[in-house]
Length: 157
Image (cartoon, rainbow, N blue to C red; front, side, top):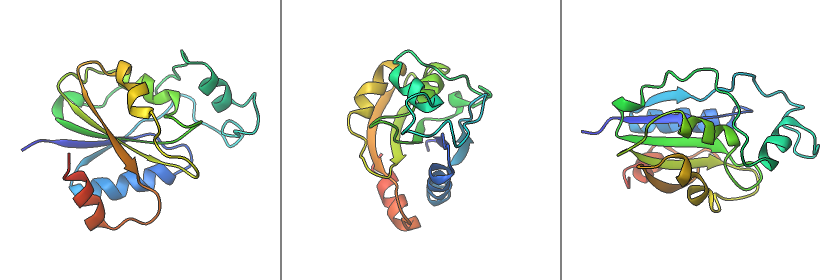
């Protein structure tokens, strides 16, 4: 039987709630990807071109530092990786996370929360950050999805 991890980054708490529900529905372990410097409300102001998140997302080489790198990735076969959609893709801290571990032979299933866009080309864009992994495009986990719906979706992977 494969061991499953739900890893997530959440700036405002929305993705955290989705990740907790998913982990509960599929009896998976949970790991929070945390930035070394937490994001403030001002940092997340997408309307401010000089806000931290805006600056990071405009720079393809941006890799915000992680608070820790103690996820035991080697113990898992399948990782559901969640994040909010920022500027139509994953926040750059997701690349930091993926590049901090060896995901060779792992299946990574993406999920996201978003107020206005889908996953787009996120899986394609993140593939270079996790060579050797099987990266699967998942779905948006917006709203109040039931445990049964989450379980049925996760079983596809």
